[in-house]
Image 1: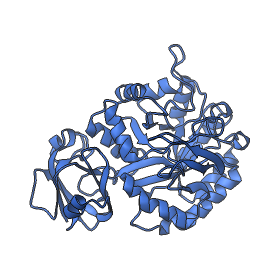
Image 2: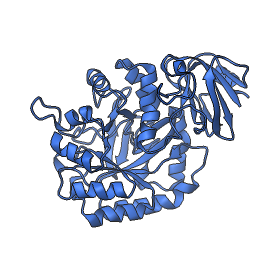
Image 3: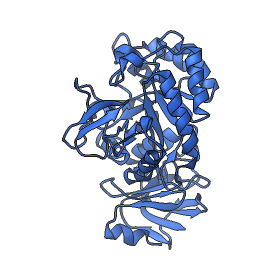
Image 4: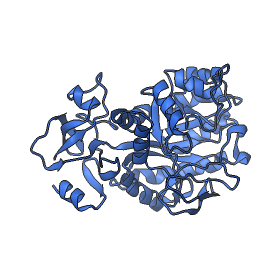
Length: 402
């Protein structure tokens, strides 16, 4: 199968691109050849093709490292059928790979949720977004920076608690958010890193020095930059200051323009180019009408309003209702170039989680593709070269009919 596109974005950099570097930085005509679910060739210029996308943008599938739920389902308490329901629909938002996220709960409850998920995740339908593992956002967080998490279930990262989670996950646990100032946290970071788990600093009141110490022990990420963490100060740089200046750290950023306003998102992109990964932090309310939903088994309310985030009863933000394609559009609105915004939603998170086969258009990579409209809304999505979603518009259906 060969797809030609008027505007191709590979998400590659000039240093690692295998196609014409010009394609990577200025969207222009290009093609992608797919064989057996893998990209066989990528290049510039229009060719006679099975599918020709005359407008919009063809790019790699989007990768979301923090998604608690969607379409009325909370991953943490959902069964296999509900996971399959959500992963089947995430391609509507351009997402082709994700880390379902579980927030603070008793360690034993999180371990049980991981054991349960480990039994059915390998058998989820291949037509849905790839599940790359699970993100445990807690319970090893700072009570004073807990956000929407339940304070009763917050605990210190003892060796036994960490081992219980890593053993329960059977390789499914891929990312853990931790507050590095907690007793035993630095040792826990080493323990998690040794187990092959990506460690992220988050929900924390750590100083810049404590964040640097976490990076020295193996932390490589910061969870939802600016939110639920010590802010930037002109004498104490805090979590934000260290995240933006430490080349070892890549930060997740919720670009719904509610969690972090446009000007500050733009500041982050300029301060840490190539080290910001777009995340949704979406919850069960995402993709649903206003009303009451669950997060961590507790009620949240999605208010009316385009893109308005859900809240707890006390007004605390409780995740988001963000789409990944909307995050890309919002990043462009914040001043990021479209190629850089695409990379922040594809290659950068894929590399961070250790999946260089995802998040880019190059030979040998998985043929996970998204066609965005000129307004950056998902028109069609392919996973492993298989068309899994279209928006149903006549023009879309005509273009992708191969």
